[in-house]
Length: 311
Ligand code: CDT
Image 1 (cartoon, rainbow, N blue to C red):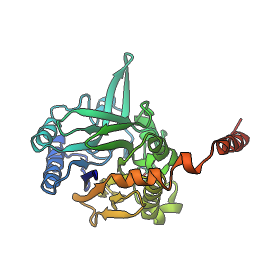
Image 2: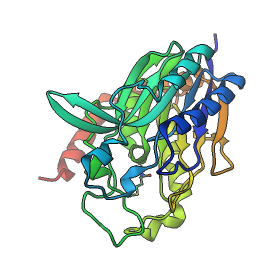
Image 3: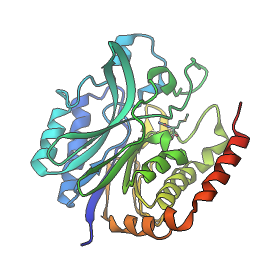
């Protein structure tokens, strides 16, 4: 029997710094309702989907910083989203800034959760690759202070068997690293879900500005193809508080082909019907380890890797 699921990518336009959680959640619910009307089983929201992308500002007041973080999920502002999703029987993946208590210490993560059709949080991911800088750069038109505000994710790259498939998550900059997909690929992933906030201009490294769209799609298409998985990459897009954010949210098939893509820089839903058996086909044919990569090759690769490893 063919395993088919329908997924949505719910791109968000800009979120103003002053926009309330309640107003943002209403936008998310609107997109979720559209996704339900288009028969989605699951909808993917962007990275830090509940507030503006606050790491662009240097802040020193801890209360101000913490006002961008969620202490519980769902909390009072996000509960309506969970309730609407349960009512409609639709799962979702949501990126947010997480404030957690671990070993009696406060930690802050750039996180995403996977919520099943019954409203249960079945998976959590905390961003591993935190881009930008930790020092104050007031001369820049905007900053990217993820290294200042977040701890490095401590949950690894996992997969979850839920909603008819093997699901995985990563966040924004993670998508540029082949290991991200590889680790999930080795755990059988069939749908990688990720959100991003990607400035179209990086003030301290403008050399690749003109290639932003290309690199965005290049890494997701390569990750999908080489690991025989679908990838759903969803942007927060448009001019957010003077910082232009890339759009181009896409759904990529295991063939590496883009099968859906947004055409605006605003709130916009894309959908695609995924045939998860296509993943199984590629994993068992083109990328079949047992058939195509004999064990002595691992020894060779290990030797070469050891030879170039730094001291
Ligand atoms: N949010 C995020 O990870 N953005 C980065 C761009 C950072 S520019 C310093 C990305 O890789 O898209």
